[in-house]
Length: 229
Image (tube, rainbow, N blue to C red; front, side):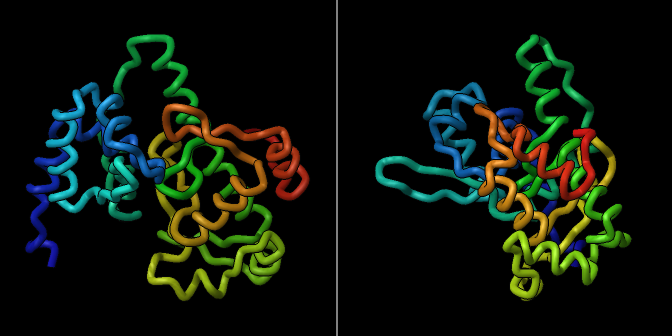
């Protein structure tokens, strides 16, 4: 029952600006080293260690040893979804430098939300899939049409396998910046995997922003008639 959930513990973990910065860095779905998270949070390695321990103890983050290094990632897509919801209701931070302004614009334009595409790009791709009748919208999820199953199969996405996973299949995730849904869940992750594998998008350094490549732009125009991203 929701009444039994200790949301105060999660709230306490989120209340510290350093821990919040670490969590937002991890929303992109990457494994990030303790040293890099310390740099992102503006903490010393020893100071960051206590914050990371709190995040792990709360169940928001998991750690993995790799040689002499420790890498951290979000505990799962539910954590990313919760952070995305909080980002929609939180007051926006005003950039204090040109670099911060450019980073904010890049995030709005195209980014990853855990393991699927978000921002203007993610929303535009989702809406193009619906407009081309490859997906059909619902209240909180999308449904793949018969034409969509064939089209996605040609991209190498095995719909039957995705539907058998325990994870939600094609969730509609209300985008933090665009206030319109983008495709999430197992299908959203599979679509993003194709975009990365084929070089249609690439990660930008220093965060979860991504950039659409010329090949990706040409493919979107040819396949989905999308030319506004």
